Length: 153
Image 1 (spheres, one colour):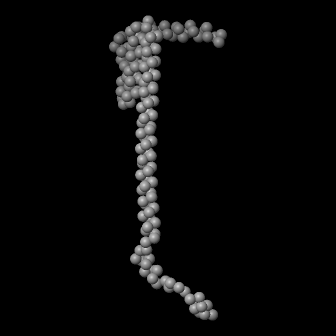
Image 2 (image 1 turned 180 degrees about the horizontal axis):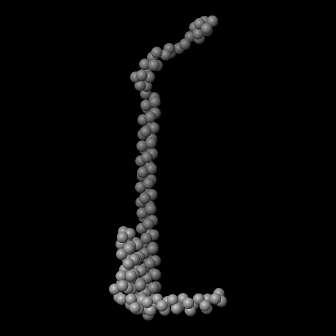
Image 3 (image 1 turned 30 degrees about the horizontal axis):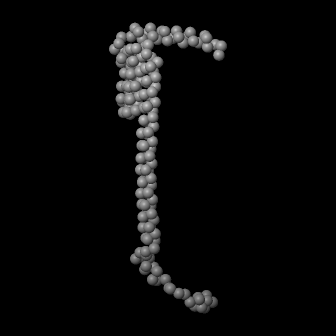
């Protein structure tokens, strides 16, 4: 903890250099840099990602326009971020519940199809075919035990 007094001036000097660099950037380049995440998020085709990047870009833009209100801007941005996260959680839960219901219905359909297949298979085993009925008619129904004993001697 004693070395923090050495780190603080170093980090502040980096911030000063960054602020000097940003102040020399043309406005068009700065706006393009701010909007780059929004453009990239647009290609993701996910509404939550796009809205989150727009909120972030607005926060950065307002911070550059009015740096004296940075605390208020960051607080408002953090609030909007938490609202987005909460709404995403609600939507995600609803999608998961709908997916779960769809999987349950598919499982019932598969079970019904398996039961029908088992019934068809068992009825095929129980019902003799023409070939099986011909073989069954040639087999003697009863066998005389005394006839078999006399023939073996």
